[in-house]
Length: 309
Image (cartoon, rainbow, N blue to C red; front, top):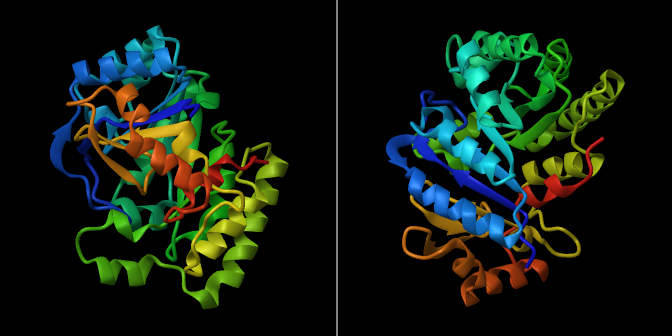
């Protein structure tokens, strides 16, 4: 295995309760000492990229210390955020701590975004983009758009909007019902894109890709966009020649549990076993080998490795 990326969910606490995700409702978090030991082991093994997620990472009390320590280890530090807690002081602290990139969630124009994420969220995210721009740090900002039945036709508008703030990259996720714990059937019926709309979705995605290219914005590849269509058709997404995600990246939950990818958890925790020992375990290596042989549940995650345009 040649693991170069690790994803650490620092906390399960979030200040929002979005339509697309309501699982972040408790107070679980990783302690700084556990993160520190994990980062040291990962760096020694050759990891280069660190992705800090949540919940909302900015709600972790040691977020700046964690970023600073990762930066000290010369890891490339990325963080995801809902963008509602950003202030000038926070941006300054993030930059000073050594953060390299931040992904902010934006799911449409004001009315659509706030229907999904809550009243007032759109204005807060736009303000965050403006603050990063004022620090001449727009290039460190990516925007994440979660594709659903509510918002897919607003994607071109989002592409145009974020370019006004100097954003140069947009990532797409597809609505995933596994992030719901309440009113699952009702919300899934509302957010899942039905088959009769997939033709329109395909046109919107391609239009957005061309628009992004014209505006100088990096956008997911045609291959990834095709995978989104297949996903909403209900098809299993597994790379033709197998998936190398478990062999090249790893995920750590806020409980300490280690996963080989977003869909396959191991029985191990960094609180009882070193991360590198988990990677060397027969269980983890078996997961990685099965994925390489296309014997995994399948998901859209592997498609992120496709080249963006």
